[in-house]
Image (cartoon, rainbow, N blue to C red; front, side, top):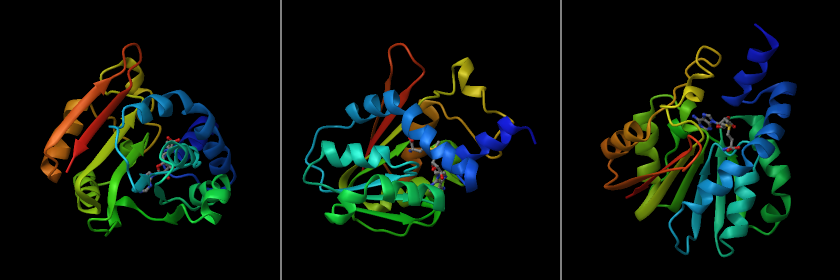
Length: 206
Ligand SMILES: C[S@@+](CC[C@H](N)C(=O)[O-])C[C@H]1O[C@@H](n2cnc3c(N)ncnc32)[C@H](O)[C@@H]1O
């Protein structure tokens, strides 16, 4: 396997030394997209937030800064991501505003717990995505909001750059995500497309 491939498989599940490098890269590389994605979250006083696929933990910190009254539960199935997110949000964890745990979204079993769920740059890797979306639906309270933000919209040339590099990687169009979310039970769904980049946010309300 080439070094390029060895490094980028860590985008799916950071592991070992290269995984540690990858989570640091995520925190830097996704900054612009994350700012845009957070701006797309409908305004509300969210109290309990679920941040799925937290990677290096930067989004977790930014959500805690944006929603000052909120508590954030950050989950990721990678031990490297969980450890990095804990380190990055040490102060907030000590202040009991943040918890981080190792969890595959496919096995999440929370019910009516969160007002907001976020997923930045992660749904490409989710196995059996219909079940994952159903788990998010179940985890949200009534009128809870799920916001997916991706840098690849499945239409641009860039969207296929990781094809064949990461096993199980799949880029969805906004329309495909909307349909999957509808099947999961969400009723109000809208998509926002960035004006000059192939970035999308898909926003679904329970
Ligand atoms: C490309 S990184 C994005 C990290 C972060 N959200 C960001 O925007 O910088 C994808 C993250 O999703 C996590 N992930 C992928 N599939 C997952 C799943 N099924 N359950 C939980 N986490 C998952 C990976 O371990 C990785 O940390």
